[in-house]
Length: 171
Image 1 (spheres, rainbow, N blue to C red):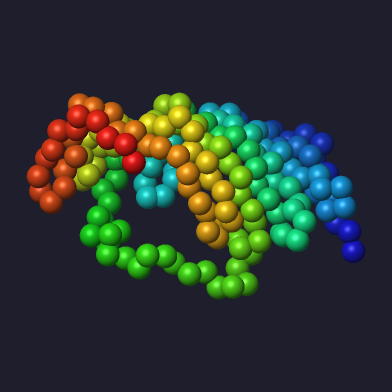
Image 2 (image 1 turned 120 degrees about the horizontal axis):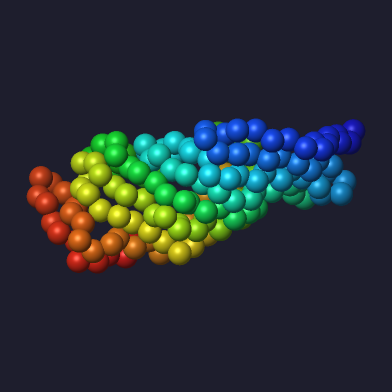
């Protein structure tokens, strides 16, 4: 049975931004849905308020449920919620999803540009991070991140109750 869906035009306001949806879903031709995001505010775990723009395509993928490809731009972000650093460091290395979880069947191929970076002001310290481009691959169940994140000089990192002034940093 072939499933064919079409969206001729779809505009929506999305958290003070705009979302435009178009395309269709046709597994025989490989046509998918296009999502254009323009200055939408999103809350990203672990507590980062961020503003995004870009284009995503969700397409049928041979032998898989779907593929997500696209380019996203982080216009800016603020991470002002504290994080449980001990819990993050002492937690199990990975969280296993059941083998039948559909995220295993969704391929990911994204370029994420960090135009505005993220300002951190929480229990980790007060500093800014940025990047040129991060590549996200793998699957939605097991994403793979590739790229370089820079920590701007002049900020302060607070670890183990000690504040340390940042000269520069790269992760």
